[in-house]
Length: 280
Figure 1 (tube, rainbow, N blue to C red):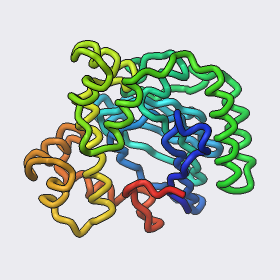
Figure 2 (cartoon, rainbow, N blue to C red; figure 1 turned 90 degrees about the horizontal axis):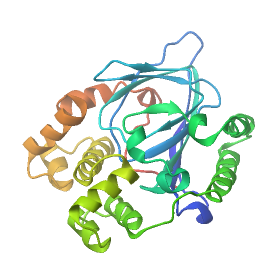
Figure 3 (cartoon, rainbow, N blue to C red; figure 1 turned 90 degrees about the vertical axis):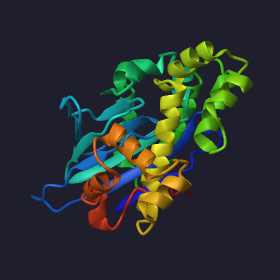
Figure 4 (cartoon, rainbow, N blue to C red; figure 1 turned 30 degrees about the vertical axis):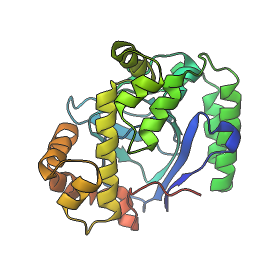
C-alpha cells in the first residue's frame, strides 16, 4: 500500500510540483471507508487506471462519479470521496498558474469543480490511463507521466509572466506575502487580483488562507502529539481561536472534530496518513 509524493523529471518541473501515488487494495466484499478530503492549495490531473471514486460535495451534497480521468481546480470546501476495492490514483499536481499557461483556460472556471479531464485535454488521455494500468511498477508510472507532461508542455497557450513565479513563491515560502507578490509582479492590487484568480481560481487572500490551513492539517497529522495551540503558532495563526475559525470556514468542523473524521480515512487502515510531502 502506498501514499507518497514523487519529484517529477527536471525538464517538467517548471510546470509540475509533484506526482502523488495513492494505492490501496481491500479484501473482496469489504466497503472501504470514505475520505474527508480537505481544501489544499493545488490544481490536479488525476488518473484512475482501475477503480474510480465517487465524490460528494460537503455543502451542496452534489455527487460526481465514474470519471476515469479527472481535472479539478482549487477547492475551498471539503469533499467526501468513496473509493473501490482496487484503488490507484496517479495525481499530477501543477504549480500555481501552470494549468492556465498550458491550456489558456482561466482557473476560475474549475474553482470547486471535479470534471472529466478529456473535455480539456482530449481523448488521448485514455491511452495514458491504459499505460498506467499496464505499468510494472511505480517507477514506470512516473516515466509515463513525465512523457505525457513533456508532450503537453509543447502546446502551451500562455507565456510565463512574473506573477507566475510570485504565485509559486507564495506557495513555497512562509515569509512571502500577497503584498510582495504585487510589488514583484509590477501590478496594482486590482490587476493582481484579476491575474491571480486567472491562475489559481481564487483571490490571493483566500489562497494564502488555504495554504496556512493545509500546513496546519498536515502538521497535526505529522505530529499528532502537538497540542492545538502549538499547531496554531507554528502555522502562523495568532492563537487557537484563529485556527479554529479556519477549520470551521473550510470544513464546517472544529479542528478536533475534523481530525476525528481524518482518523477514519482509508489510509489509516494501513498505518498511513497525509503529513508533509514525502518525496524521492
